[in-house]
Structure formats: C-alpha cells, structure tokens
Length: 191
Image (cartoon, helix red, strand yellow):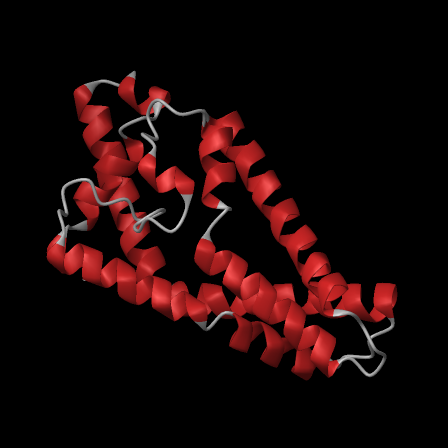
C-alpha cells in the first residue's frame, strides 16, 4: 500500500527532510541519496517478514535467558518464541490502523517510522524536535505497552516457578526501554 499510495521516493524525501547532512549536499547528490534510500526502503519492506523472524528469535532468546537465569522460570525456547509471537499480535492492529490512515488520509506527510497517533511523538514535528526526545516519545506507544503487558503475562503464566505478573511485565518493560533508549541515543548521534 505504501508503494502504491505514497511511493517510496516520497517516503524517502519525508524521512530525509530533517537530515542536516543531506540538506548540505548538492541537489544532484540529494537526488541520489533520495533514490538510494527509496530502494533501501522498498527492499526492506518486502524483506520485512525475514527481519521480523530474526528479531523474534533474538527477543525470545534474550527474554528466555532473563526469565530463566534471573527468575528461575524454566521456560523453554519454544515457549518463549510462542509468548513473543502471540504477544506481538496487537502489532496487527497498528498495521491495520496505518493502512486505513494511508488509504483514507493525507499521504503527503506520511511517515513510515511513525504512521499513526498511538504515541506522543506522532503529534510533534520531527524536524524541530530533538531526535533523542522524539525517539523516546515514540516508545511511549499504546500498542507497544499492550504488547509488553501481554508478553509479561505470558511469561508469568508459563513459568514453572511462580512469578508475579508485575515482576514479569516489569522485566519485559525494562528490556523494551533499554532497546528504545539505545535507539534514541543512536538517533541523537546521527543528528
């Protein structure tokens, strides 16, 4: 839908509009940067299922290690994979809302990295907001919090040793915010 409704060239232009390094290039070099970014986005979008599977494997392994070594949960890797996959199902709601917003909304300012207003950063201008603040505000997302709670509940309910729901949700939330904090730091360094 992104390719047909907006086009990856426009998405690349929107993404790079606030990039100071791109703005300092000559117009011909800017066009090359937009074209390369558009190709990268297109390839990335079509290869997304592979990237998601790799990401799920990593997240499941890290959470399994966290719960098994720190909380003695005795959760197997297959259980951990299932918990993470089922916990990520609300992401489908986010994707459906993004498609509806794209289909019936204004595609001019479409931002692939933050397509719908489920977090405070969606309502800020990414060009004038600090990259670190913008990235951290995207992590306070209703759908992401829903997924954190589901994954924490899944580990609490599937652990062989009793773990409180609050501890399990807290452990998942800590990892989530560590990853988001690192991402925000990298975003701030890129400028």
